[in-house]
Image (cartoon, rainbow, N blue to C red; front, side, top):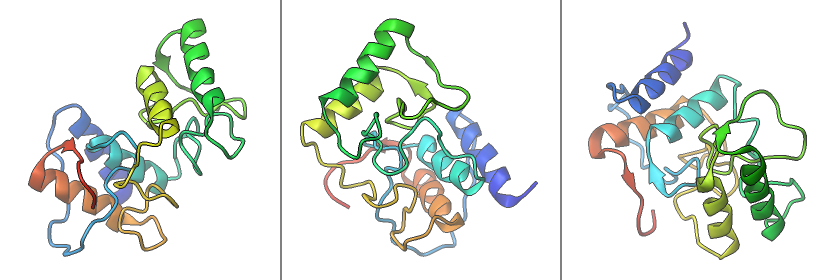
Length: 171
């Protein structure tokens, strides 16, 4: 098993309440902790980076602009409406398989379509700032232009040192 596959499993374990390992020897200054745009730093953020490193990604999340549900390059009320309409028609559920383009329902990157996705789209629409998320490439935590194991380690190290928490202020 590769280190990154193992790390992905470790991130999953943390979601389930188990221990998470990282490399605390790295002395980097993290900038963008909020990979999934929910305003928190949690194991889900580490899992999102690990999934991208393993080529798994989130097929139900727009890789360019997470709140752009219909993939037209803009976030409008139509994006919010798509989520609300789908939840009303099909209920809250885990998103599996590959979506019909363009249906990027997973705004927060947790693998489910829930009211949290609608809320994230509404927050974006209402001009709420996401200072803890890299606006160019969400999984690029250290802002170096690449998604590498260092990005994963930064999140894991911070969770180990400070715990999962809501992110406030500016980085």
